[in-house]
Image 1 (cartoon, helix red, strand yellow):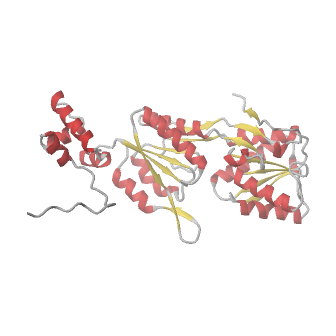
Image 2: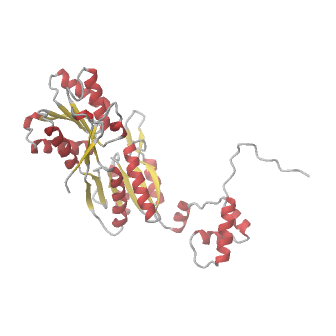
Image 3: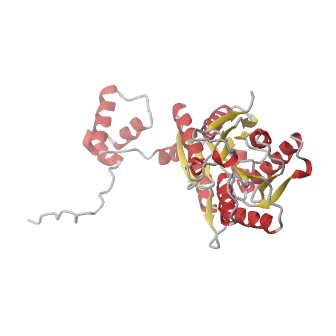
Length: 358
């Protein structure tokens, strides 16, 4: 008599199948499928037998496969431009929680991939998978490379853009921070500090950067800065910010305050100022945008605009749920300014927050 050998230690066991559940429960495979697909024509006794058998075996149904086989689209895809960005994680988490409250499953997908030269490009393989899976709805988070390539998806399923501006005519809604209000909070704060010359470091690198640069110009004009406020071109990176500051110093154009397009750029500004022996805030005040974890580090203590990313995520999910009935347009979320030590000579051991009037 030959004994069956035990599988080697560490060999992964195959997950239980509907056939195994049917055998354990003493029913047909079709009945198991009927139970997990929500069929009504099953007695309570037989349903309990199937569910208990599945629990004993650790069986979990493949919801995506069920949706495809049944022709249903009962999940929402969240397409994220950069999965490593903590800001986007806040938006995704809030959107996912709100969709779960509404009984919607979610699948998170990366939108971009490195082209091999350090540039982020659209991950066409992942987009192809989304087209095949046919989700019930789509939320994009952050600036997606080549967003126009998603036009066919946006035209076929309800789509909401969160935390970005890029969109096509087909999207249900765009939910983002009110950049005009946020930059006005920053400029007003610096004006109250007596700053007479101010520069914005940013403007390159995408539509969000361009939007914030335009918002800065409008806020500076409103506050009467005139030609004492200008845009110093840079992208979203720390390296780009350092180069911009080095240029300002070399050309003897360093202002008394710098507003950076985001917090990472602001860190580059502070690094370049300190390397040149310019103290912050005594020699030059600095403010950022996004109020990331970096801003709250005591060593940095960066004044920054909080865009309320959790609210952006939740409203994006609500817009998608409402958008199953029709388009909503653009939704702007009021930001608040969190004042810390980088922009004021007054002691700021406790951050102070200022909100936009409603």
